[in-house]
Amino acid sequence: YNEETVARAADSGANASARFRERMAAQSAGGVVDTERVNHLASRAVKALNDLVLEERVSYEEYNAFKAWLIRVGEDGEWPLFLDVWLEHSVEEVANEHREGSKGTIEGPYYLEDSPEVPWNGTIPMREDEPGTPFTFTGQVRAVDGSPLPGAKLELWHADDLGFYSQFAPGLPEWNLRATWTANEDGRFEIHTVRPAPYQIPTDGACGQLIEAAGWHAWRPAHMHFKVHAPGHHKLTAQLYFPGDPHNEDDIASAVKPELMLDPQPNPDGEGEITHYDFVLDPE
Ligand code: MBD
Ligand code: FE
Image (cartoon, rainbow, N blue to C red; front, side, top):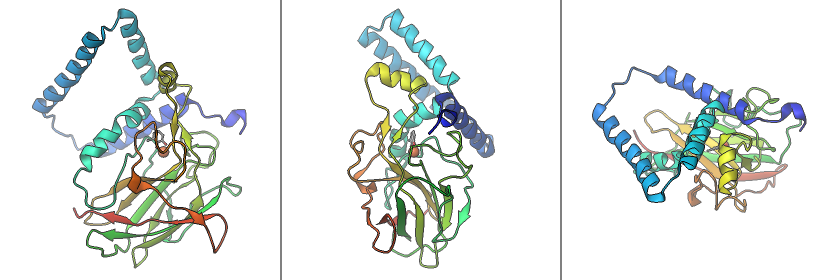
């Protein structure tokens, strides 16, 4: 890819922050503040940081470096990235503790609502010369009692073969590699797309600065994001992964689970690879 299409942290961060703000604004029903709960959580958070300073004997030099870095996270618009990479997995663990159906995992910073609708066996919007291995994905959406859920909606978004997400990296068509399928009368779907590449979070912003300073790495294994929903059922947010990816064991976002592994095989009926995965939704 050339200079013009180079993704910059400040751009993807600003987009992620703006999109998040829009979604929150659309949802806000003027929620009542639970003073007790805020007091409890905020006090514990402040205490945890104070304990850290005291236990680790943090210096003014370290304190000021931390302050400068926090300011930069905001300037780079990387609060969504930072929080989704290093905190969301615990929130997801709490939220889905009692799920009976398929495992979920984190949403991450790059979800967009209202992606283009395609039929139950449709192809994802992609460029004419979209790089990457053609990938067919079949499956069924079911309830926990095993009954199929006809008309279930399945949203998919994933990075391209260079690890870029449309609307967060420049130079990509608006809805590239994002779509919504409607399952057929048997709850089945058949997705046609290309295999995503491993994803490196932006290295030129505040998160990248932290990763470099701490000697960490910036990689997530290749993954496909899903939201699956049907009337009367809890919406499932998940990601699916590919066996053998070097970062399945050390995902920077701690979002890989053994139940979320695909098993792609050469497609006997066409180009590229084919895989199968069923989604089971919990009743509301
Ligand atoms: C991603 O693509 C992602 O899925 C997460 C969780 C964080 C950063 C980038
Ligand atoms: Fe992702």
